[in-house]
Image (cartoon, helix red, strand yellow):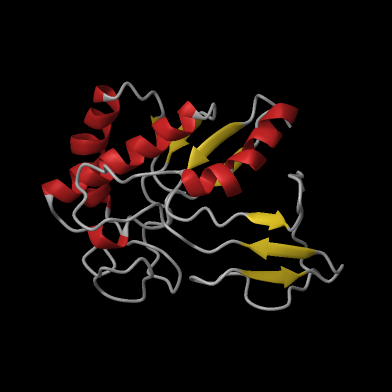
Length: 206
């Protein structure tokens, strides 16, 4: 396949990596008959699952990029964790097929930007704060993510501002109405992309 699209979940990017001393590329096919021991989604602790074929898959913690409450300028933003756990695998894939297109789709904004103050949902206030300062800070957050990856030689071709906009779940999520997404994209994200000369396309929903 010439174009393969990878999910890059910006607030956690849990990734499924087989425990190894050296980076390897694995193509995992989930079949109806495949049985996993344990829940493959955990909020914080690192865990692992074992497939019925006895392959051990490590699940990395669902951790956001560095959060500093009130950091509206995103001066503390960093992708240091990705440089160790995510980018080596992406670069290995790109070395095999440089035509791979990647898109990012955050499951949740940083907790401090939400009404609930939590990344996980199942609560009525699992939404982005309705504030110009928050919208601007979140747009900068997403822009810095794309630029940081570009600096590492990895191009994010498309951005979906919010994954599963109607999901209010036990894992990181954020309910975002059409009106809220339109406000975020049209009044904050697109202008920030233009200011920062970011060419990434913006797509609605995943």
